[in-house]
Image 1 (cartoon, rainbow, N blue to C red):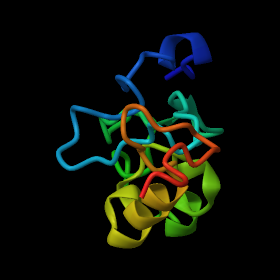
Image 2 (cartoon, one colour):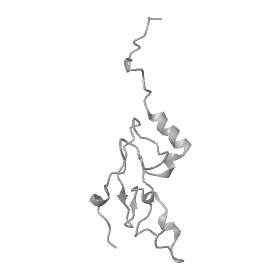
Image 3 (tube, one colour):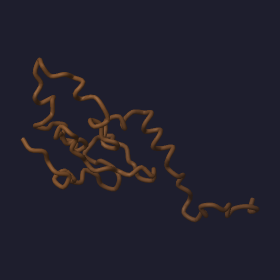
Image 4 (tube, helix red, strand yellow):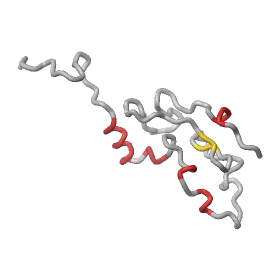
Length: 117
């Protein structure tokens, strides 16, 4: 089977910096972390498309001779569309990167209420 080109895999899987098709997926909005498109690794497997199956994947073509090490490394993990973002620790990391949402009429850097109490 031939490898897909990047153009064929850049189908948008996010809406407004979140993945609504994944239950409990975190939002990256306001974190300065840019959502990334799916990519094809050197084995011709699309990573980050949320389909979790690929004709070229060793998981789909597993035999007794398949070395599990073939699926180790960063080329098998998508930076923003990965189940790891659903962990408590990573959700807290995203939340810590968000700027606090101030009241509607507050100045972002000045204390507009100074001296009014």
